[in-house]
Length: 114
Image (tube, rainbow, N blue to C red; front, side, top):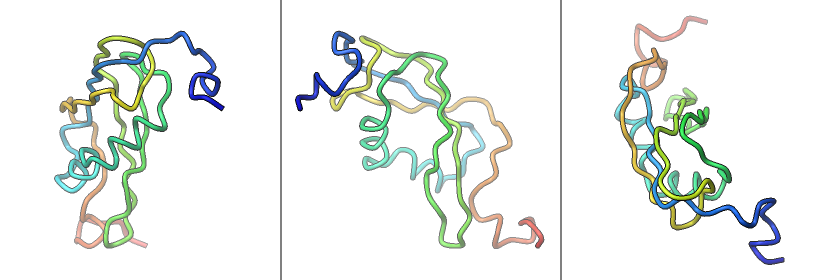
């Protein structure tokens, strides 16, 4: 089956450039996870339609202490078509903080109590 047959809207154009933001209070570890090439590649493969204003709640990993990190990513801008593709350039930007919980909190005094 060709790639064109797999897509429901074969006439849609591939976006050239997409700007995706994450919250300012995302930890350095979280930023590293989101911006690494394997995660960017995964976004290209798992997101079909893309439009400014889309919000994606993405699981980016489990830290060494078992703390899961879900990050709200938001599409800020799309240049070109409305489909994500293998060659779509993804740029990251930082937006306002949203009180995201992540990082090393489970190992610290500020972590959750059980």
